[in-house]
Image 1: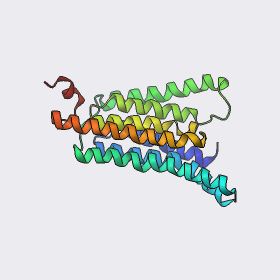
Image 2: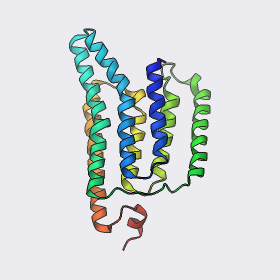
Image 3: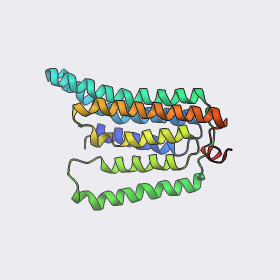
Image 4: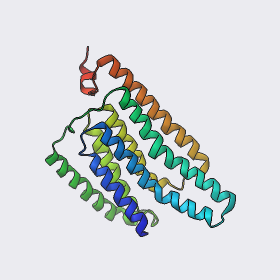
Length: 214
């Protein structure tokens, strides 16, 4: 694995880890933007280098497709969720697990994923070198989603989980990319619309209180 790829994946894991402990929705949205920007930047730079090396029309299409995917994840999705926060509120709350318990769960997730990748490495294609990073980021994103009562934070966690698979699916067929991007934007817009309407009805951003409201 190249040093620049290793560095980008490491930074992405660290950023996702920070998402487990931050308190406000705004901070979590910022981490989502940073995670998406870093995790897709390497592939974008590779496409730019290929374009500058003279790969012609094919390289140009590949670059624009990669840029669109990167821009949607790093800019469009965070902005949609940020707009939802503006329409509701910037929740300041602790995750439902304590820092100590969260740290224990965090260590358990990292260790278990590393052990799992070691034992399954012989069964997987040799070119999936990023699998340990992907599995850790996905697990941490699920932890973020599971330990929040703020629906915007839960939506951020789901987006982080989706972003974590980018290193594996970066070479998806070009014909699928417009569909994937449209689906991602649509899901976020629908999610924000539902959250805003629920906030107007219940006057709170706690899904626990939504559940028990009359």
